[in-house]
Length: 321
Image (tube, rainbow, N blue to C red):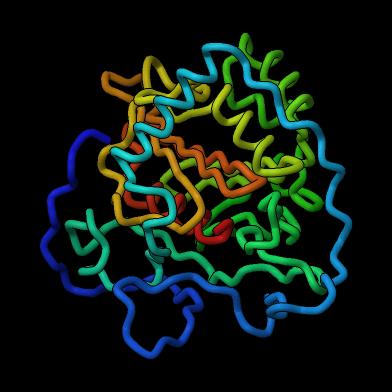
């Protein structure tokens, strides 16, 4: 993103979406956060004399070997863009669209802003004694919760995509790679194996207005392997390094994405297909959250609205943060 978003005028509150669980605080925070329900998520005991019994962490593979100049260039572009567009890592606060009044949400300019109605969101249960992904003792930043439980549920009125909704929502690497041009898939598939891929969960739906959404959560053995795959193949440049299927030409940073919509310890890179476009308008975004990378693709014939896309990105980001 190359410029600052102008401050939008306050608008009257109308039909807010379901509330996300938020913690009690002695003083009203600037922006409420999605937080684990106390009866669901377990917090590690402070200064426990013995380490809690947790599920065996996957065998740590050797740190991925950087690819020569391509990785250095993309990494530099990625971090430069992240600082310019989203501010320093960890400086943001959780931002819940479904918790906000209309006047708290930058970028909403009409009463009928087009937000979807999602179910109430809570983070999934962890195995007994397991740490949250960004706890100090969780050095690999591993999500111990079920990967399918970390997927954003479909909103009201959505029709599920059967190919992405069966069983535990787990899909193959080939299904994930089908979102990219065919000539790029062999190299990406090889690097998924080399970079310690564990599993991929997915969910997709179509709304009554024909807007199509697909979400993939790609989990690796640790955050180092996830970061390696992201830098080599997915994003961080001023234009999408490898645009998804359906993008006619380029997909630059989406400058309309609210810069305040951040979740600590995670990053998001949001792209919007540049005009002139073909018959279908494609938006896509990546979220990097420890050992997991999320891909969110939303498309529609004509114009894919920004508000439901941004809403979907923010809520999925909260579930992973």
